[in-house]
Length: 246
Image 1: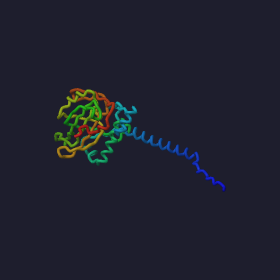
Image 2: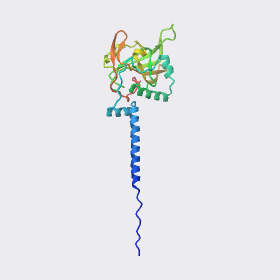
Image 3: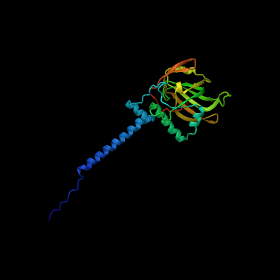
Image 4: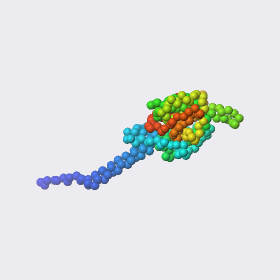
């Protein structure tokens, strides 16, 4: 009786494995490229900032002066209120992400760059610590004072600022007294908005803007003195804003 010989199963051609290996390599390259773009392009995300720190690739803040700061709008309290208060929650979250990214990347794309102007009355002052966005430095919380007309004295307006100063001379916090009025101008102060929030003040909604000066050098305190401000070396995006959490 003749022996029946079964044919061996057909083998995949060699080029199948070659195509599969190349497809996997391409997928890996695309994923790696996308992850790198996300990490380097979004340093405001705390996880990305930590990765960049471990890689030694943290963004370095440029030491701008009054003469070379990026161009941006300068708004007084009424304009600030009109511009920011109507933001929806989604718009505010998106804007805060972009504002933080712009600050960390030296406003290479000065999108949303806004400088504040106006008179602000000091309410609180404290020294920054290791739990804040950066340290050393000081932060001043102040309320806008606005004249209703040319014949009326300035009155409190529902716009507040957190003025965050990067400085190693933290003892200057004692130079700012509760009730003092700070006059802020685009030049020379260059205090840029980096965060937008709202809170309830005396049972009424109010706007709170965190601002950081981006023109470094000497900051004058009226006629009584001055102190140096320099770019912070390392930030803590996870700490976030506002600085006065309550």
